[in-house]
Every structure is written in structure tokens, then in C-alpha cells.
Image 1 (tube, one colour):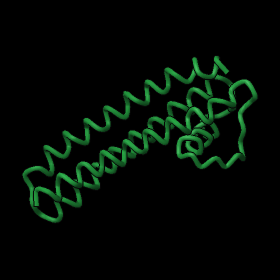
Image 2 (cartoon, one colour; image 1 turned 90 degrees about the horizontal axis):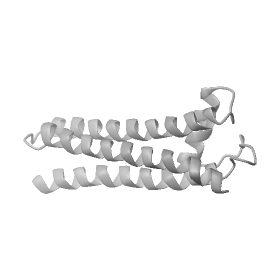
Image 3 (spheres, one colour; image 1 turned 45 degrees about the horizontal axis):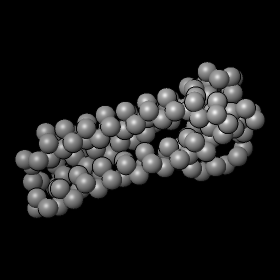
Image 4 (spheres, one colour; image 1 turned 45 degrees about the vertical axis):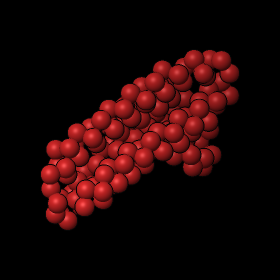
Length: 136
């Protein structure tokens, strides 16, 4: 159990860094693209851009976990590792692919990490939307 926590912690920290970078990128994008524009098109394109940034950040986090699973030898190819990671990160829990007993605990650890990071992504998008609405 302790080995899973020790191995999972660096990926959690990397994900926190990726999430922070994506959030800051959203703020900068908002300040450059939306802050001074009042049109509907600017609003739609701005929110689309911010959603794209957030999705990219979450996908990079899924790839980070998948890469760890591949490095640990849990999967033979990156596709399966990223699929399993995405299922964990999104807290879907299909259970069609299960890791070995040694690293099985990384699944719930990633799920908790994913739930928090997806929550922060939603909060980032909502903050930008609220700012845009208040400006109107």
C-alpha cells in the first residue's frame, strides 16, 4: 500500500502543476480575449477557448497517469494505459481492465485526483463565465 502512495504522489503533484498552469492560461486567455470584447461571438469563442484549455490540461493529466502505468509494466501499450487512466481519472470505474495486485491501489488514488482536478476545471470555467456575465 505504501509503495502505491509513494509512486502516486509525484504524479499527483505533476497533475496539480498541470492544473495550475491550465488555470493560469485560462485567466490570461480571458484577459486577452474576452475582457475588452462585448460581442456574442467573442464570448462564445472565448468560452470555447477556455473549455479547450481545460480539456487539454485534463487530457495531459490522464496521459501522465497512463505513462506511469506503462512505466510500471502494468500495460503492454500506451493506448491501454491511457484508456485505463481515463476511466480512473473520470471516476467511471468500468473494471474491464484491472491492474496487478501490487499497483491496484493507484486506481482509486487517480480517481480521487481526477475528481479534484475535474472539479477545479469546472470552477475555473465557472469563474470566467461569472466574470463575463458580471461585465455585461
